[in-house]
Amino acid sequence: MATLDAFNLPDELYYQKEDHLWVRVEGDMVRIGLDDIAQASAQTITALRIKPPGRPLAVLRPFGTMEAGKYVGPLRLPVGGTVVEVNDEIMDNPGPLNSDPYGKGWIVLVEPDNLAADLSNLAHGDGLQSWLESSVADWRARGLLKK
Image 1 (cartoon, rainbow, N blue to C red):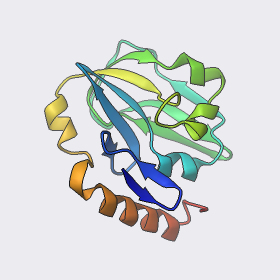
Image 2 (cartoon, helix red, strand yellow; image 1 turned 45 degrees about the horizontal axis):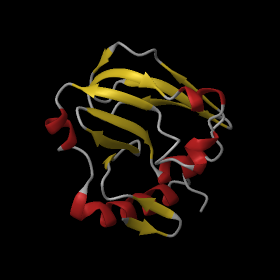
Image 3 (cartoon, helix red, strand yellow; image 1 turned 135 degrees about the horizontal axis):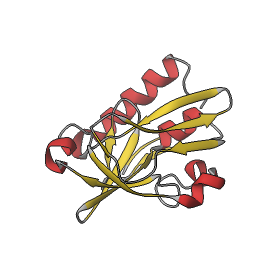
Image 4 (tube, rainbow, N blue to C red; image 1 turned 120 degrees about the horizontal axis):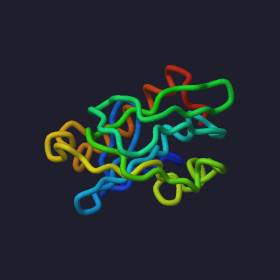
């Protein structure tokens, strides 16, 4: 696991570098959520709006929006495919996005179109620790992280 201060990035996950969403491969599907850096930057997440399942989306196309305080921003798909399930539990209570981002705080389950190619563009494996360190330093320098 890559760690820095209070930030943790589990090794088995893949990470979308710009928006800090994680991808967990589960057989022929992938589960997607916010990584520790994204949830910490957003602080208390107050609402999500997710497009209904069934529509195919390309890589980095918005699948919904997230609200936190005065921030409203897009959630962009780290792998192309069709959203097959939305985590209904966080729609009414988004608290797990902050308290359990790698567990109960997952956002969508996706049937990917071209998983191998999409995963090759995500952070994973040996470079994870250095990517975490540079990302945290960059986000702190830009004022996007309070801790």
